[in-house]
Figure 1 (cartoon, one colour):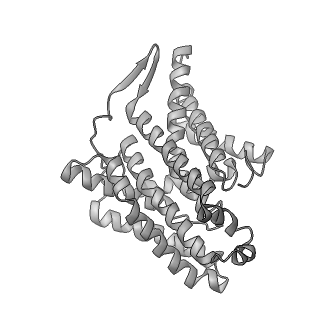
Figure 2 (spheres, helix red, strand yellow):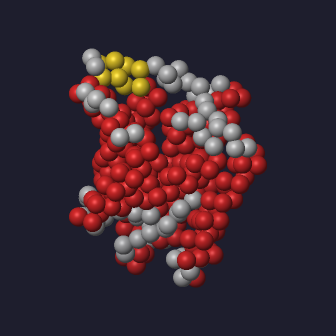
Length: 292
């Protein structure tokens, strides 16, 4: 196909906006895996849970998906704290957090997916909002609001988390807990409590990420699997625990996928994107920003 400058410009812009979405779905992994060393492969399933809660509120009451996700943040936070409590008592304190802990999260992934199938079936679900459909036009460039609004919300979410992590004692303790829990105890902070709070935050992000997902595309229960490899790859590529690195890696992946789709077609997009991620990690194993 003939690729014009206008087409390339729109592909790059769409890729950057898509990268905002990828940053939103990955930021929780940057906390749980990047900072706490917890391999929560069920994270995309909780994002999908956020999608379906937004769908219920939208279809039954006409509530905006993003506003719904913000209201439900405390519920997802408490869910995350409860999950970590079970994980801590059953595996981490016994030193079984590696293999058995991974099996625990795989089980949560399976249970969540099966539950969603039993409740909602396998049909695709979508939401309605005033910003789904219209676009802004800047000369030859088009900005679909269904991508622009989620990207802005994602960046606001990450900015809020960055302020919390850098300006509060709990936030700084979260950054330190995986690196030196003994020193953390000397500061009168309980590592288990700090991890419980941090894991609660990581699951809380799933509420907003899920709403963003169902705004961008229709969802069905099995699509959570499509994001497992992608979110961990972005997290590692950006540098474990680095929010800035997560945003940059997500943007790069979004642009690579968008350009590949535009030039070669959507079937090539996943292969080229993951090939690029692997190449980046081969050149810089610590990621773009190293560990935060």
